Length: 208
Image (cartoon, rainbow, N blue to C red; front, side):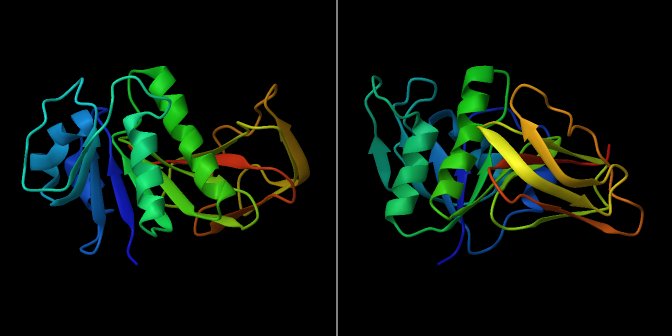
């Protein structure tokens, strides 16, 4: 099965860059006000979900799930859970990082949720690419300007960073002291990050 792309309602300023990440066989779920990106993304939705409190229901000839306004799951979380029911293992989330910090942090936590299920999740915004590093190594090419490792849950131990300006051996990062910000890949190299215990949020920052 292909990849599921979840489209949220946060602003996207560079559709061309986002388009470079999209695949022909992607399955698109548009969440409520994420529909404002439909024309610019030039893709066909497979599913539309939302309570339509921030965008009108377009009533397209597309499967649409209308959600109640009062619920525990945000439209984005519901979309992810629905895609999981349909058998998707890989997720790309776009339009989910924006001015609403509460929604932004909630959407970042979706990466933790997917990782706990053994699924692959990535968030792309106008500035960066995000993923969780846990039981598998992560690699960062030198095409990125910077990369940061943030702990957003518990304590991460046994952290190794190789081929970077600031290497680390058997390190530990907890939520109270975030010292893994703005590292750089050595020119001509590919950095590698591994974690023996816990999880880290890897943010790869694009070149300006």
